[in-house]
Image (tube, rainbow, N blue to C red; front, side, top):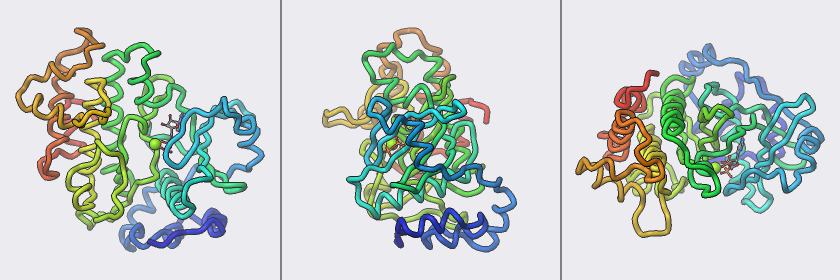
Length: 333
Ligand SMILES: Nc1ncnc2c1ncn2[C@@H]1O[C@H](COP(=O)(O)OP(=O)(O)O)[C@@H](O)[C@H]1O
Ligand SMILES: [Mg+2]
């Protein structure tokens, strides 16, 4: 894998869209036919380069009270632009390994700069002065993980859970099938699904995303990255990645949504190995979050539990595609 150093980032951002692939690692490049087909479908990128002064002012100098999230490689700050728009500024942390964070930064901007869907987070731009920054539309309700597990907050009601399941399924279907290129997210989990003011879910954090050329059935990857508890068996054992890697992680995410349990909670058993025998026995009521009580739509719950049981199957060929998930769960695409 060829890494692109900070010095060449400035050159990358000055490139015209059609030559973007030339700067990407070989495995992310596409054939001439694919490029021709996809270029026609691409909308012009809408993101822009922000100045450091702009994002510094917006976040009140990266004031600690404005920090809304901290992940493995980044801190995220809330900010307000001069025109009043709320933004999230993802600042790559200074302690992370340089090559790795640059690679994640490029992966995220390279992927998100070309997608557009109501259930995928909107990239507004980036800043490459004084460090590396990604600027997003602010998702005012935070992540599904914080809303679901923060004991100080009210229990998430069933309607919201179902809406999040439907929206996330649609966003993932778009990434796999409808968007100009085939995108595998590789880190679908509750802390990477953000919520807009109306609780519409948005898939975020594309640092591990992969573009797969359409003629490849799958791709072998090392090192194995992602989040324990969400990793499909063929991925953590053999590094094999394709759409079904995301389908498995989506199944675990569905289980987390309906049960309110964390995928890994310090006990020896992961959420999926706890839920699998229960779902196989058909005792699906046992997986509903006790905090929801009886206040849920039984048909919707049965559909989600059924979809989850298919998504977490050990063999990828027995897992459904996201369009089948949407069909089984009777969502309309
Ligand atoms: N656009 C956004 N709006 C609101 N909060 C955000 C936004 N982007 C990220 N966050 C918060 O920051 C956290 C970490 O962001 P993420 O992109 O997942 O970074 P990492 O790659 O470090 O995991 C998220 O879980 C969420 O709480
Ligand atoms: Mg994250």
